[in-house]
Length: 194
Image (cartoon, rainbow, N blue to C red; front, side):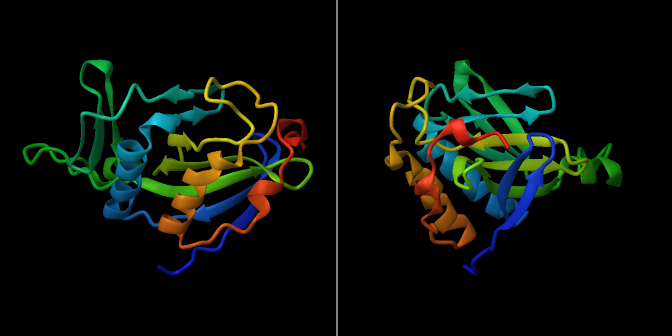
């Protein structure tokens, strides 16, 4: 895999600097990444839509009973504990009543990326994956385990750098990038606001 370089942007909504790795939008790539996340890391995932005015930070209720792909939609299913559908490809609709091109374009992902948020001290404080549809509406954010947080979602007394394992694995596997050492230099959320 060719390494994907990161770009640096200033996120005006959150007033933080972010490093962004723009990922491929092919259905097979996104399916592989999301299957890996939910099938192999459900015990450590926090996920949900992150939209202006709301942040859903949900924990997986366990390993999914089933992950399936049909008509461009990936379904993560926990049986009686719920499920969600996420458009990662082309959804043409039923043959008798196909979707118009603008609906197909709206539902398909237009942007998928890894990100890390940089604190005031110039070091990372958050890590994740996010995806947006054709209208640039957020579809999903996956918050990777954070060394500055505990499993109970509290602030850690000292950083647990082992919690960066998922971030480092996904950066290598899906962006072709080795960790640069910057991730382990942060001091925590006291430095997050710009």
